[in-house]
Amino acid sequence: MTASRARDFTLNLRIPGWAEGAAISVNGKRVESDVKAGSFKAVRREWKTGDHLGLELPLTKRLEAIDARHPNTVALLCGPLVLFAITNARPVVTREQLLSATKAGERSWRAATSGAPLKLLPFTSIADEEYSTYLVTS
Image (cartoon, rainbow, N blue to C red; front, side, top):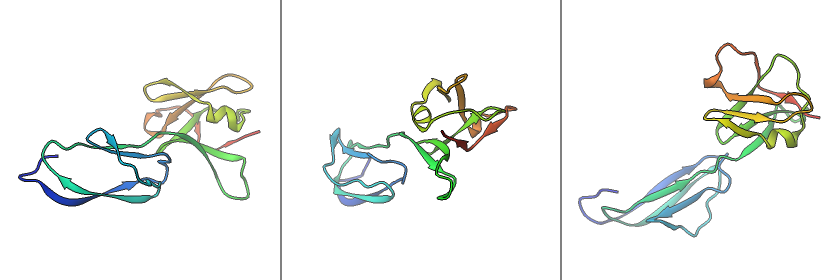
């Protein structure tokens, strides 16, 4: 924070809906208050030059179903990123295997399946590969 003089005001932070477990800190100390995903959080105090506001948004993996009638047809997300399965065949994969996907590079993930490991990429990293957004889990 840089200010011409110390002033009391409120900063409103948008906490994305995917950011379960988000945390706010001021000058290295965690703000002890309820931070809810999918809402705004107001931080009111006297701010001065040198103050530091920290916002931690965990990038947790989650599955989102294509619709309520097909709960086993899911997309894998990591924070705001949809991870696309790089495949031209229908992999046999469980929900647990998808949620256990691990980083395999700066912008790639890998999930174990009953066959070969499944490569997952965010859309901006896909070139000429065949991909699938939704996978049917067993």
